[in-house]
Length: 482
Ligand code: ACO
Image (cartoon, rainbow, N blue to C red; front, side, top):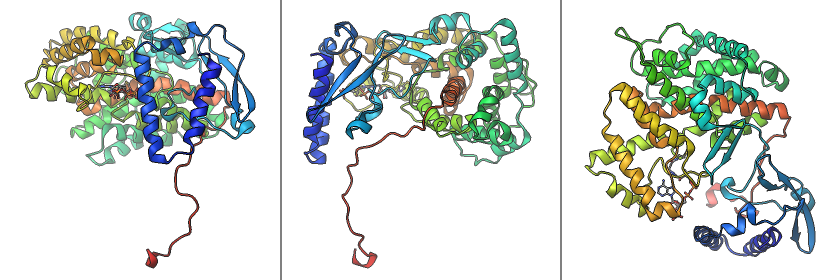
């Protein structure tokens, strides 16, 4: 089937479905979805794979009611193709419908490349495993935000600026202290970032050219202070005082010290701060995921970097997104408590009674490359900490059983970045409800890079459309008549 007839075939079905009642329609969608999924599992890749499209045409023809609409084809630097429908509604009054955006490109971006089928992740063209081996978190922040690796002088300057921005103003500290004790650390983090913007109003003006001009200061402030906010909130929640330790210039060592320093021996093993650095680096960006799309959406309306990052933090909080690392630990603890070695749990996940958290991904249909790196970082960190983790054995059992099980193989479900990160974080002493905060600290440079990209591009405000399925016009019934 060539791409043109595929477009016509799909559209024909959509037109037909418009005449069918809503409930029936939902069933048909589900049926088609399941049918297509099954088809793809039995090797239907021939319909879609690039290698089978003989030669990429310059445009795709969409036929609607005997009218033809040529739609330009966009090609990315990694040869990904997209049908550009930006003029479609204007020309035809039709919009496209893509529940969950699985087939929709929301922007052109030059920050991160993912090939989920091959398990590839690159920041600005550099492979994630090479960066994890040779770079570090702060250099990677620079790379993501500015597009290239820094010279030694630029890197030093950047690191100095980050170190100098670690101390929170008294007002921000007081904001965090005044939050209800039951506030979740993710809510406190979003709140802290908003109050940080409030403390530096010239960096958060909502005047795009001014915010862009001062972006470098805002970015360093956010990257540095996000860990100070996280640490302060943790200490307050434990009834401790805010740490007033000076920054040494080592991002992760400082963070661990802001978090845990007390009266005793505060020495932090190098292997531990290095493992944390790798975790941050691996989380630093992941193209148009839920939180990054939220950040871009907020930025598209002209909001400043602090507001955009605070919104992204809220989006990250959800258990299907950044909250999954917490959910993995809860799942492993539950399995451990029940005396299961993981095998019963696998069966219940296959029966749809539970979900194997830390498995599966919207874009990776292969091993998440970050999970591979974290698996070995996990072994090293536990050894350095001298910690025996009973749940690590369960995690290994779950992974090896799932990788050999038809259910997971057919659905291309592999461990994702969250599967092992929680085990390391737990061994380091982070409370479970802070795991997603750690993810947010790592992701901050990615959100900022996307904020800058969208602000500098002068792109229009993001505003998707919808297919309205509610009541038609009806008259208001007076309260006493209802
Ligand atoms: N355990 C068991 N079955 C699963 C899992 C899982 N973790 N993930 C997907 N499936 C099954 C679904 O039940 C579905 O089966 P079906 O075709 O028989 O109905 C099939 O695999 C496809 O699943 P979808 O939910 O359609 O996949 P989607 O791409 O929408 O979801 C997601 C991706 C949300 C990540 C999902 O795999 C999941 O819930 N995983 C667990 C949560 C998790 O680890 N999230 C972290 C993601 S990484 C990140 O955000 C940093």
